[in-house]
Length: 490
Length: 123
Image (cartoon, each protein chain N blue to C red):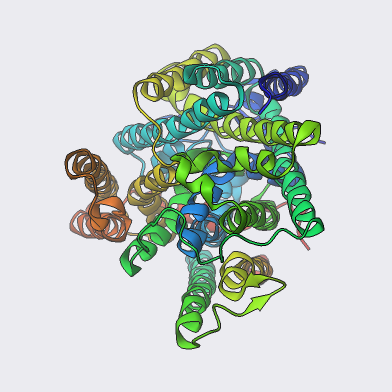
């Protein structure tokens, strides 16, 4: 790959992000603008922005790499990432918008009338956010190293600097425009090269080296338990992701929140066809890429394998640009939501506090990322989903749908889920370091940690039923009844 | 694009997480009566039932996809335009099911709310 072209691609994406961010700056002035773009972003804009924010390093690089390694077993990743949004639509979208809260801690505090619940939720949300930013920075490090030959840290640092500048400068209104643009950039960056590759392969009649069921790296097939546990994590993890939830507050009302989610599902479905196509083409025509030891880099290398010359480097540069857009958009979405939580809970909730909180939210995971090595991107993001599904998901689902939830139950459930899932993640990486492999039940803890978190939350709430807040009937009414002005419905 | 100024919902002790009475407050107050609460409870029940039915139906179809591949030997290796059938089913065929479930849900949920509004409005 031509380093000059790749560096240009990264620079152009970063500049475009910054310029759209600063353009948005001119129209965001109040604290409300900063937090939720004043809740008046149109469904198509908002849906593109949600798609742009959600499609992370794992989706752009990790899914295709994993499909190359594991074949049809890995197809459950894109299916789970998309179906997670279906669960979000079914159980969370409209009530959460109607709750009128800005962040997940706002929601739990309003629903359970407890400051302590708010603090525990804030802590969990910040942990989820930091855990999720680290793989984005690993992805950036990998991309910069493969495409330009620069040292790995340059990629992570570049992402953090661009994100801090745009978020601290423009808040969420400009982030909405930035991310809507980045969704379409990511889609183009995957679609155009693969269409070129397929037409080149069809044109010169290249015969497939292997069948689709070839197993280039000799990966053991995943068992039933692993597939089910992965699906539990992805289906129930999505609805607790802080950067996904904060987006719903930018809809004018509950009905629009549902319509937006419907559009998002369409956008995600179209997007995930392309990583699947990369995985299949690589498996059939370039299985060697799996043996290089960096399957996550496959998407970056594939265009150069089949298309030489200037066209090849331009297509590779397009993929690099798309990948960088993925790291930037997910990281900035997470930083916005974390900064919202930190500035309201630790600082005074002002615009200045938000800016400082944004810098803190981005720099801490940068430290983690620089100290640790990249695992498989799709796998490490899958673990974050398992953590979210074991902590935030139960408190949201029970808070929205069950009148009996109490503050004590919510805290006990979140702590149980967090300790079990966090413990499994730590024990799993220790086992990997010790014996070279992780047992399935530690590698994919969601199948047992999520039900246990739910069970503890329900049982402790039952035992402390006298703590159900007096405001509960009103809160439930607010969550579920349609807004009075019917402008957008019927 | 109309813009509404929103203030940060910093909690006051009596009214956690919300800043003062607004149009939302009157919406809840209107439902404070016993009859109002009956309507609200029935709306929540019907929305939850709808969500569970759609989710359950979707998960059944999702589980059926790999079962079909196991149950019909040779089906996974059948090729359509050079692409093996199992890849088409899992990589392409599931997405329309997701979209259809979502569309059905959004339509029915809006209908439930319209019914609630008719009931609550007549009160």
